[in-house]
Length: 557
Image (tube, rainbow, N blue to C red; front, side, top):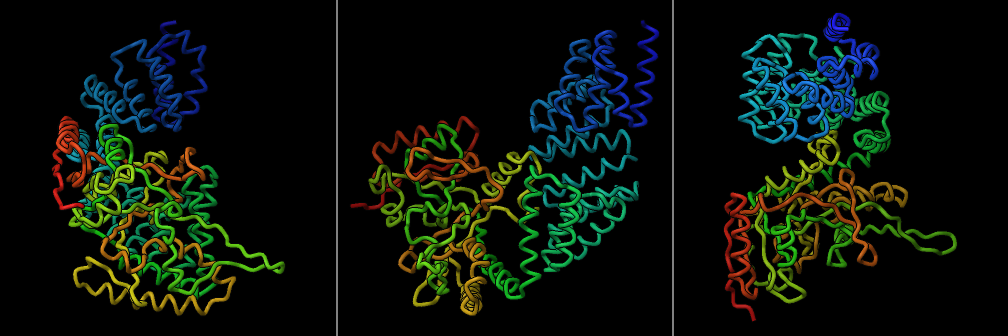
């Protein structure tokens, strides 16, 4: 039996080097493994399942190997990979730590632990690990590719590109490195250069669905609709997975690009809408959110995620109508039997904020800083905008098992200033005298002229894309608010329902906000404000965070 087991180990090792993973699984059935009770054979079976992307079976056989031998580094490496696949990052790091402890020169454990640290945004440790792996063997191309990804995550694009180039010098057929080089160029809005790299990647690997998808996005940015369509069709044909959200998103995008190809007027309207969005984009350091003490207690002391409701559930019943009123756009339809109706379209999920400087505003305390309808008894939370966006994106990525990266889809959450309509002219409070207001009014008037010229079937086609920006506009009587809207597209979030309300309210859960807080302002009529401040202070302090807490003393009557 001993000789037979040794012979089997040699055969399996040889098959593994030849990447014949299915053959390994075939010659190592459960009966053989149980009979041999050999940890190394269990580990090889775990590694084979890992190579085939079967994380559950990888973990099962890795556990069996560890039960037989707690000092087998490859078993911990295999199990670490299974945890990495299921995004259980602390467990993955623990196993890679053990693998490295048992085999300090195991390059792949350093590489994969680096991937873990990159997901945790611990870029210093990620670089330390990948540099250690390169030191052990400076001729492995994938190590430079992964180092490039660490730099790209930090927006150090030139350093990232140098690593991708190094990877492709070592391996001229490394299609993934060319794809990642293209992604880095696209992030810098260098779309023609990105398309060139994607094309090189596809010359090497014409069956790469992701590269077709990435090139389609780059073609979309330069409004090359024909090539966008071709690449989306290639992606859909290769991917062909109705359970994949990127696949479903691509089907929607394909319908959209077909409209742009078929109708020049649709393409022109879409272009004007994108211009309007860019003019209203809000990129200040912080935003402030007025809310109740009850909600604040839940979000801070109970760590409840920040929620956004669909646009239909905003407090103001006129929300979303100002744009359509300005455009003289009426989506109601008349049937032959004189029935009048409107069609439902999905609305974005939106949150209401104001500029940071409005964190202690008497009017806003009256309108929004309430507790159980009592004015000025709530609080105002000042949040780091960029960290907020990044945290929301992390939630979306985790929800979709690493398959959806919002920025790559062009579906990233973003903040926009509200424009207020006063005497047929839009005003952008807080825009600090930039030319955006003038350009916005030019674009809005252009949009109005375009929409007026459309017949009813044509208006039906643009109703959805107009709805996507409808919550960026309000009546001039609200201009004192300097409101800023967080918008999260409905297509990439898991919807939840509050059944305690009638009708039920649709909402999405974002992220915890405590790590994102810069300041908490307690309203001027909060009772026992010192005690609230003390509770928030010590709870936040325990998390090693530094958040300023102030108590408003505005003269509220």
